[in-house]
Every structure is written in C-alpha cells, then in structure tokens.
Image (cartoon, rainbow, N blue to C red; front, top):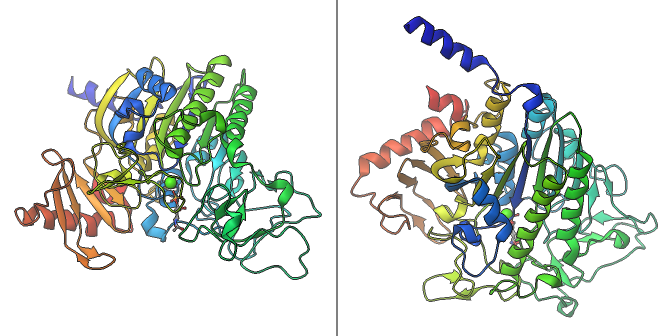
Length: 511
Ligand code: NG6
Ligand code: CA
C-alpha cells in the first residue's frame, strides 16, 4: 500500500496538470497605484467598481495578496522575472532608462511562449527600453524592449504617464510619428533641431493648463500637463491623456478578438496607466465617483476591466481563460499634481474620507502593509471556486506557480525568488506562503502573522527596528520588538541569510 502511494505521488508530481488542449489563456489586468481599499469588493464606498466586483464574485478574492515592492518598476520586474528588484538595484526608472530585464532572462511571457502560447503586453511598461550602450533612436527601431524578452506583440506607454516620451510605441515603432518632426528624449536640445519645442514648466507655469504640478513634474508641458523629463518633437505622435484608457481597451479588444478560434493559447499582460498621476480620465467619467480625479480614474479602470471581460465573453474565451486583477503598489493621493485629491486629516492623508489602503497602514513608497498589500482577484470558471481567500500570495510567485501549472520545471538559476504557490492561487490552500518579502526603500519580512522591519536610516533620523503582530495589530501601530527580541533576531537572520542569499529565496528557503 505504502509503495503504491509513493508511486502514485511520483506520477502526480511529474505529470503536467494540463494537456496541451486544456492550457488556459491567461490575462493579467494590472492597475497602477491601485490600493487594497479602492475597489467596492474590498470595501470602497465612494467608488463604484461593478465590473471588478463581478470578477471577484465569480472568482477568488485574496485579502493578503501582494505585489513585491511598494513602487512600480521593482514590482513589475519581480512579477515578470521572479527575481527581487533589490538584487539588481532596480528602482523607479527615469524616462530614458535602459531595459532592466536582460534578454535571455526567463520571464513570465517567455515561460508561456515555451509552452506554446502567443504573448502580448498592452499598456504601461516602465521597465526601460534600449541596451544602455547605444542611445535609443525614437525615430527608428526602438529596442531592445518587450519583444526581446518574450512578448510577441507590444503596444506601450513606454515609461509612465507623468514621464516623457508621451507617445505610444507599437512593437519597435512610435505610432503616428511624422519624420519631419522627429522625436528626441534628452535634457538638452539636439543640435540643429527645428521641430516642436514644448514649454518648460520651470520657466512657464502658465503652460500647465490642465492643472498645476510640483516636485519635478515640470520639465516638459505636454497637453497642458507637466511631465518628468524633456522631449523634443514628435507632436503628431502625442497621446491624448483623456483617451488613453479607451485606446488600451480598444487594443485589448482587438487582440482578444483576433485570438478567437485559434489553437494556441495566449498570455496577455494588460497594464493600465490608471490610477497613476496625472489622472485625466475621459470626461464621461467625471463625477462618477464621489471623489476627485483619482476616484473617477478608478471608475475608468473598472470600465476597462469590463471591456476586457466582455471581449473574452463575446469571443467564447471566458471559460478557458484565467483572469487576474492586481496592482503594482499601494495607493497615493496627489503625488505632485494639484488634482484636488489629497485631503489631509490630522492624522493621515486621504481622499474625502476614502482611504485607498483600506485597513492597512501606509501606501505607495512605504514599507507598511499598505505599500504592497493590494487587491488580487483570480477568476477561472469551473476551476477556481468563487470566494475569499486569506492565503498569503505574491505576484513574484506567479512565475513558479504557472511553471507548475504548465508542467515546465524551472532550473535553479531561473526566477530564483519565485516559489510555487499554485494551490493557494487556485483556492486549494488557505495558508499560502509563510515567509513573504516586502520591499520599499528597505526590505521587510513576514513570517505568518509576524512582520519585521529592520532598523534603517530614515530621511531625518535612524529608524528603530519594528516588529508587529498583524493578527492582533493589523494596523501596525504597536511595535512589540522590545517584548520579542528573540523573534526579531530570528527574522533578521532569515532576512540576511536566506532572503538576501545569492541562491535566491526559492533555494534558500527550501533548505
Ligand atoms: C516618483 C514621482 C511620482 C511617480 C513615481 C513613479 C516625483 C517627485 N515623483 O519619482 O510622481 O511618477 O516616481 O510611480 O518625481 S510608479 O508607480 O511608476 O512607481
Ligand atoms: Ca505604480
């Protein structure tokens, strides 16, 4: 009997979970700066999000789902590579930054491609473009980019919506560029340049007609909105901020309808600019939330999610498609634009009584739960039982989990920080990972209900080490490090010896 069980277990462990014909399509709908508390199904009272609420009702809604870092680039880097950003010094990227993901790295799209999928990314990129040796020629082939790391098709907002260049990039080419007004991204005016010159907000604030901005959002004024970085020319190719969401939704519809009746499954990474600043939702969303631009942008993002799920439905693809909704970091309010979002109370910032972090402390940029604990919803009709899961799950584990689902084992040097958490993602394990890494300026770790933030240097003073029990103190208010010094030391040891280990979290934690 024992022998039989062992053999049966062996067979189960080496047999792919899926036959080729059953491989599900996978769509990740990724919000930008969307907090845990910004969706109706997570408790938002002032922002109607009917489409995402429906998705949650038909799928599994995680209450302890995480992105890997409290800012965009490291989170996206980790989700796509299964490697923590801190290993490669990945930080928020400047407008003209080169690729953070080196061609040849095993990425999430490459994993799917190896398993016979066709793959695409539509929307915000912010992972850098170019090899870092030769400057990117925005008038020629703009590469390496997503096509060189596993995506078959890309339609991008290359950086962020508050950074130049304010143009769309389809595969290797800027869309709608007029060769008579070539595009350059550089601090200084290119020699002999005769094309469009945009107002410099440092000298001309009156050009900020949409709303005023501060904190470096003033180098180039494009469409009346201040941006980080300077661009020259490319006027015919400029995006329209108010139709950007419509454009990305249209591209998603086009892509999905082209997949109808095709044999090979697809992976689509659909990455919104909403609800990142500068928020400029289409005027039809004005006043649709009881909040400001930020709430209305969230209603717009919800509408886009509805367009994507409708496109799947109309093309008969819903049933065999896994749809994931999540975000790249926690919430932030005005973040440098006077869009009327931030209303300060005596103790915290929020938007007219709406707290985008829900019950968690902090938000974007911060090491507290609100920085990385984000909405995470997964729907797979007939395969994932609808409900709510308390399991601890992280986007960095998507890669190893999908590798398990596809029966494509990872080599030890691939996606070194990604661990298989498929059972939790499918709703078959209510615990998930015990050890979780949270990255902001520093690195914190969770061990079940405990959270440890090492002592570090804050902006003004040296921050002391912190230990919280999230079960009794979910709001991280009561630092109990002096009551439990041994626990803090043990967690520090795991952080130094295992999390920071060159072998990666997967190998180090399984030892
Ligand atoms: C910050 C920007 C902020 C935002 C962020 C990136 C300033 C003062 N602030 O540096 O507005 O663009 O970078 O956001 O420049 S993220 O979601 O892409 O990480
Ligand atoms: Ca973000």
